Each structure stands twice: as structure tokens, then as C-alpha cells.
Image 1 (tube, rainbow, N blue to C red):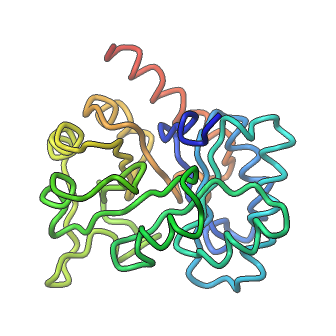
Image 2 (cartoon, helix red, strand yellow; image 1 turned 90 degrees about the vertical axis):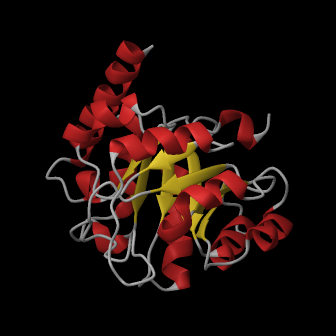
Image 3 (cartoon, rainbow, N blue to C red; image 1 turned 180 degrees about the horizontal axis):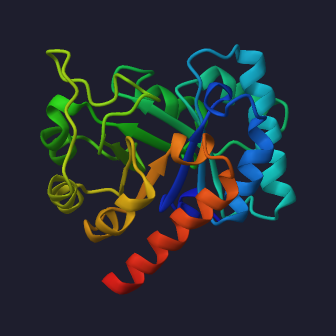
Length: 236
């Protein structure tokens, strides 16, 4: 079965060693996937490649031990080298998430293969136009945001003039309608935002600090999943 057949971005956790208040990443991911999260992205702008390879391997092991290798998608942000090295070591990494200024999508596809997952963050200043007109033949989903300004990624949503542009629920509703592929929304998303976000019709939400900096990450993750699930049930 193709990785793409199982792709579920409804509850998507982005994490790196700098986001966890000094706690190890893999046990946190274990708690998060037990709570029902369906996608995990390893992202760090400070960790060395060797550390990211190790962390990715540890997270893949945690997912496998939970019996969820076919249900939970494991991605790495931007680091094609880390993915290739991890795969060389036998680690099951499902794909990559990149921005428009990162490694080109066609290069990722060439090295990772037709079955891998590739997600793309569209630039804020051309978000709607890009989503409507982009060649999505090589992309599996769009990442969009931010809903709120976020200290986790201060440049998230930064426009050409250096100002951060946040997006409204109405804009995400419109985005979901015009996008030819699924859209996952994040950027400062909190538990209180989930019911309205579910109403927009996007495919899911992504979070970093709402889970990774929580006193009890597993509990925080479970509350987010429960809110999303119940909101979607009401919507349908």
C-alpha cells in the first residue's frame, strides 16, 4: 500500500529538540501518537545532522513499537540529507516538508521517490494565488498559516515588508475551497481554536508549543485530538 493512501494530516505534531523544554523528543512523540496524532514532523534549525538522524530513528522506533508505522506519517523538515542518511540506516521516514525557499520539490521527489510524502509551505504574500496556480503534481499537501503570531517560529507568516501576516478562519475556509490538495493549518494554534478551525473545512491542524511545551504533552495532545474529532463529527 502506498504511503500516500494512508496520509492523514488531521492532527500533526511538529517538534525538535529546542522545543521540548529539555525533554527528549521520542518519549514525547510516543505520548502524542498514543493520544491520536497522525503525523509527526521533525524540525530543527539548530541541531546537527547527526543528532537529527538519531532523533528521527528514535521517533521511527517509537512509532513502530506502537504498531502505528502504517497509520502515523513521519516527516523531516527541509533536511533531505538527514532523510537519506536515516533511510540508509534502515529508518522508515515517509517524506519531507519544505518551504518555497528550501530544496526544490522536484529535487526532493527525485531523491525520495514517487511514493514519499512531500508537503510544502506556501509563502504568505502569495498564499492564495500560489495555492490556486501551483503545479501540485509533486506535492501531497500544503501547510498554511499562521493563525496567530508564534514565538516558536517568529518569521512564520512574514510578508515581503517584514511584517507578520496572520490569517483568519474565513481565509482558511476560502483556502480550503481553492486548494487542489489538502491543507493543514498552524501557527500558534491552541485548543480553543480547534472547533472554529474544524469548521473551515481544512484537512487538519499542526501544533508545536501547544503540545511540546505543555506540562503534560500527552494530555494536551489528547485534548486537541478530542476537540478536532468531536468538532468534525458535529460538522458532518
